[in-house]
Length: 286
Image (cartoon, rainbow, N blue to C red; front, side, top):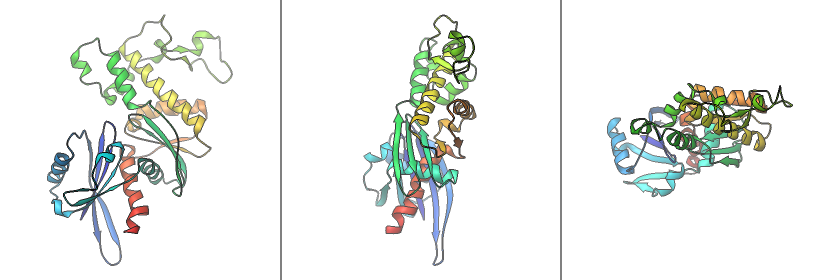
């Protein structure tokens, strides 16, 4: 039998196909397929994915669903039971299972950002912000709005991150070094004094996008420092699967003093967390 685990994000959709076989002694589970897509028709998506992996609908035991979009689903689909997992639980379990930590602050950067603390016994949302990948896409689209329709059409966050790598945020941001000779306390000359405030400098589109990405990551990092306890901080989400974004967050953490880490498969952390939460907290009660 197969189980589908789905994460309905605000802008992206991730899935895992799990092949489950059981006997009297044990249950064996293997990841049969995974991917991401933009879904506008749930029934058509399920039909297409089953066709892609040559799976019969009758062989699907359950659908495990999480994310904001899962709230719109019924409790079954074509006689397949849909089990919904609270997104905060999925975030917490995904971050802890992939990091192999017993307790941590898990920061999920998606369209916006959510911060959850958990030790697998308790799951508590401790903060969040509207800043995230969606912000980068929105600001990036605005920045590029005067350079032609062709480039506007490709303003997804991965394209924008690649553009940010070519830019210099210091041509857009007012830096400590611009307003003070030397450091101010522990703030060195390369620390941002004011985002997008260097109006007397010449900057190109890459500089502006670099500054936009920096503004988002800096403010998420400052919020993390403000609300998190001394436990490690685990970042998850599609955006943080990019090495450049990780490097930026590491650099900011050096300044804030946060202990941060990243995990493999961070893009699929929430859907993995939904499956793990189902296994550990729901399935045993059936």
